[in-house]
Image (cartoon, rainbow, N blue to C red; front, top):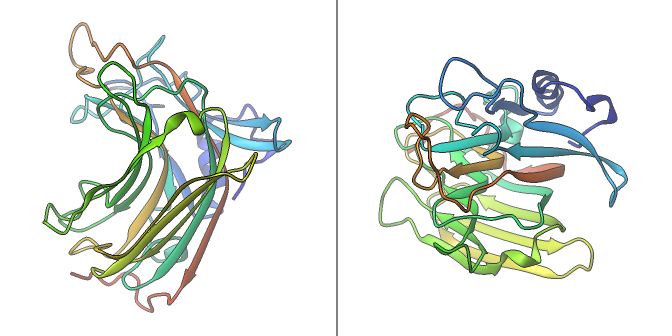
Length: 284
């Protein structure tokens, strides 16, 4: 999937309709009313002509000013912001873009962070692998997460792994990859996963401009499943904590480090081998 010139200046629901043709979904955004952090008039995702590739890409925006975006107007998660696309909430028609038990999957995409992108000490995920169903689907299995110290220094990229709250979760498996190597630059991501408890996970990120390898990680003995799930979804965008602030407070408040940010995305590819013949089956 790529963006398209026909999406320029189109509203979010048209972008969602377009994505659905490729097995993706754009419904987790702040374009909502009636709750906390809704911004129905804001531009949260746009098709934008990228001068480097000379083609249209997706631009995802998260706002602090003039409106502080929330998490889908939710009253239960007033301490965070979400603007994400994801593989479709459909494990029958679109099983081929999901991670099912014992499947191998390669995910490829390109992204660009805005120059000066500023994370905090709290979470700020730009990619997630997350169980859609089952009793342990609350937290992501894998995240790619920009992070910084409390004063905004030591801006870096992390990869974080967790499973079911159990000891098999390895926590921060990649750390201290300088964020400065990413800011304002297109990078190519290749992520390979074997979805089992004795699974495999690798992630390689290469800067497009000069081919510099920014991150190259592999673990062939890592738990890559959530008990009681039938599928793992792939997600992309900006999902971040308000770092101390809450949307139901007056004043709202948030870390002074937080500001409006953008993330550009393009060139989504999904490859699969050993496809599960019964992808809707729950597996412990």
